[in-house]
Image (cartoon, rainbow, N blue to C red):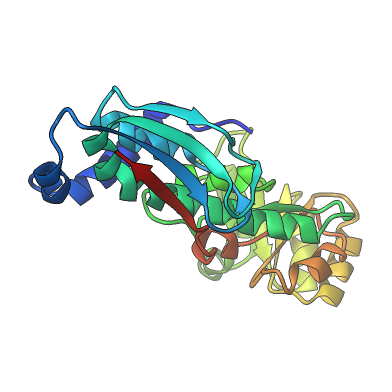
Length: 281
């Protein structure tokens, strides 16, 4: 489970802090506390779930003051229960209180994604299917949200439009056929780039196989049709099920025999995990 490089994460946290500080400073905290004031605080889970994004969240404090120290008791990918102390924080009180909301926004959001992902992963235990995410992420937070999926035991689909080919229905509408779309792509991308085609009929599955694509995205198919599609493919390429995948539907989809199950729900609709910061001067 590789963590995103700080080079990628730090600008995200800086932007979030600047959004909160605005044109000046934390006028509440700075009015009440001196620059020399110190405090201790703890990050505490209010609900059970899977932790993700702790290092990113803690950057909110260290970017405000390099004297803030942290002792993490739980690490990304681990389970927390109600009342679990995630980390102890101490140091400059202004930095801790000013950075509190930014840190919690990041930690609660990413841990919610990890928790939702873990739920789906657990529901398909015993099948060979993997849960993968989509590009339905919060603008500007994709690198962190896809990391949160990995913390929850899921895997990543393509990160963006530039690292893999996914020929969707609107591409096919313009190109005129799967064969034409695939031929156009192959004429313009490198030999290491994977090609996937979105299909919604069994006829399209056969058409995609005729072009020797790397994967077929079986869009909004019911489990019975998914099983038929998997049988047609017969291991010649990767099969991916997609479309309204949530906790109610995922097990039936997994038992169809598909290789991957992509879910936008785990990033665009996952509830945040309730985590709080408790402090004392």
